[in-house]
Amino acid sequence: MTSDPAVSNGDVYKVVFENDRVRVLEYTDRPGHRTTPHRHPDSVMYTLSSFRRRLISGDAAREVQMDAGFVGWLPAQEHAGENIGDTATHVLFVELKEPPPHPGPTAEPHLGPAD
View 1 (cartoon, rainbow, N blue to C red):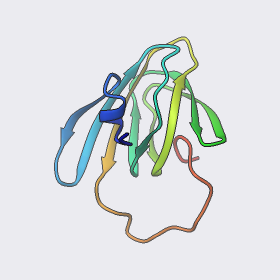
View 2 (cartoon, one colour):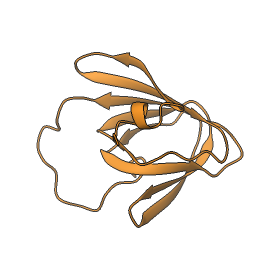
View 3 (cartoon, rainbow, N blue to C red):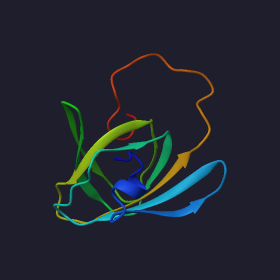
């Protein structure tokens, strides 16, 4: 099984641009849809719709509500997600291919955008 969301969840993740430094994914789903576990590198997230989701990583879970037009940093993470709202999810992810400039401190895994 691959952790690349464009492969493992190709019904909802689509590569819309890629070069040697970044990859841009478009994500769309409907209420009730669930993804299988997958991994995101450090990314910038741009929400094109307002939505509610539950993000799950191991035993940790977090519910997020995002407004259309939100732009934020998404630290590298592995999770599965579920649309728990009444609206479709539509998001662009700009994934960085370069490693971070220096390793950060060891911390709990991130779920969703950085606070």
